[in-house]
Image (cartoon, rainbow, N blue to C red; front, top):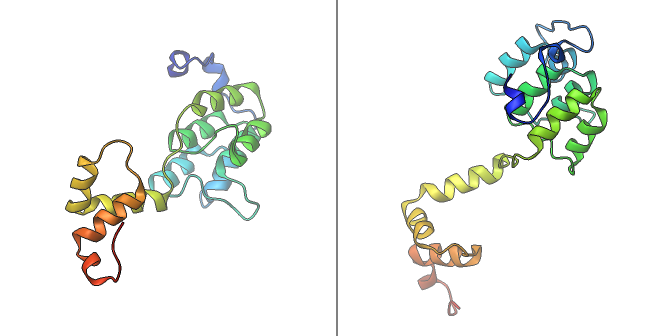
Length: 169
């Protein structure tokens, strides 16, 4: 079992459903997580649904999977990038709502991963690095660069300083 090498002591019987599973063929990611419908959940995740999206009650899909004790659904969400850090709002809710010790152990095993970049930060970084000038500046900069210097260097590359009154400092 893959979880033994990760430090989680689970056997095959631990993957039996804690509550009866039901199929939600037209359900969203929240309904599929709550029901433990891993086939529907897999389809939704592969189609690009945001794994950390919130519903009208400000809950994420991982919370519902943990609350219902669906180990397979929780594992699938975690492997797809669901955030479960214990000292965050969503992470604390998932840890407190975990129906059984198996789900808590699973959350602990995934807790050490760094959270993925938020979509806006990732898009800004990709946009900045898509420019050859920015990429070369980034490659040449030492490890402790700071953003104002990068903005100034980018402005100087485009000749903005020539058109602005005053001296750049």
